[in-house]
Image (cartoon, rainbow, N blue to C red):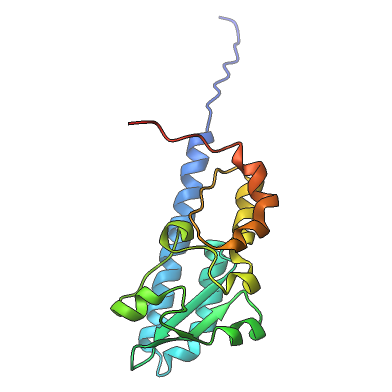
Length: 178
């Protein structure tokens, strides 16, 4: 017969997404191996912490990093490493008393804690929030993404953020009655 042309089209959107996720996973695994290897082979691991933290922050798209260690007597936290805040702000939180610290639980139990959901881990309006404005920054991002927010606090400082919280309020759905 006659000459014919056959066209086959295939949607590769899912394949591209999976490839992208695999590349991100590979980058993180390599970063973890490189970081662990550097820390384990270094004669002075503390000297590497700041550089490694910046590299990890860039990979995770993290803007602020704070690493506290418990002092030997266990009554205070010492700011061991940080990034994303100014040196003068870090100076304000260099030493935190157990009762006044955001991470007082760490001092009391001597167990590390990774805080991912600040509002359910502790009151997001600790006294230091007035200066650092971390909660406000988080609310600005959540508001821009139209992500619902619920905050439990006894602090009057929450009034400072009502301009952000008011538009978010429309996104909150009442909990179902049981």
